[in-house]
Image 1 (spheres, rainbow, N blue to C red):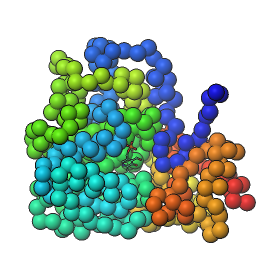
Image 2: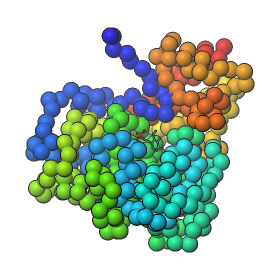
Image 3: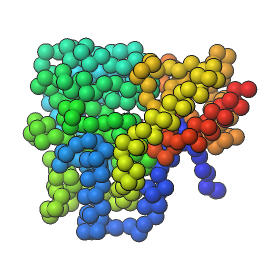
Length: 361
Ligand code: PLP
């Protein structure tokens, strides 16, 4: 089988930074090798930078973003705890499902797909929830929500944030915004392959955790002896960490740090703006509400009479270029175009606009 090279311009995974790919080919290290533990510590430091946090419990969970979501709820929710979830897309809906499975009494606050959440409405949904949960960047709709505003209104609740599509792409300041716990993914703006869930939890939230969560693998109390808070201390075995993936994450994070995190955010913004301007100049209409559009994930309406799937297949066949379909009732009427990590640059914008123009001719 020949190797296939794609332009991964969908909702994720994105193409990784070359440094992250190269690191996968380094000789494999054992998960308790001091040389690997240095890499792990460096990756945790890098994660603190992209999260905008000083939390000592900031670590890559050995699983994808959805496991990060599960870890967040299973470690904090006890039977009957009230969890308010802001829902403006598929991943808010998933949060409701996961929280309910962990025993929460879920108070769901819905907003139309394509619109941001209203922090005031979310904060007023219940007088004393244990947790308020929201998605920072809804990948299903291309919308950014105001987490800082929610942090100001959270009261005594823990603020739980999904940063899967925001981390490493747009402004994210967990500590300044009052985020108590958050999870993310590596496969989007961090520019690393899928497989890890960057996770962070504050000391205060850790104190309020469930002492014997109904998950052994995702028990943060046990994981802490191995990673994150263990920095500089003897490590205890918990599970066999995916050492190659963590080395790759570390390389991706170093690349971001070298470019400068704010420069990386600006690069994503410039690419997203150029793409969104270009699509509108082609006569296409954007789906996400103006003023709340993510630069790293653009949602665009499929023109009347155009076969959405046929266009995507054409782009894949003729340009080796992947874009995503919409979700749920928008599956055939919306495309999702991601310019994340190394793909957030003018060359990708020109390529996707040119290819789409040709496909629609
Ligand atoms: N949350 C958001 C906002 C996402 O975009 C995704 C994946 O696309 C997830 C959660 C789930 O992550 P994963 O697919 O890595 O399990």
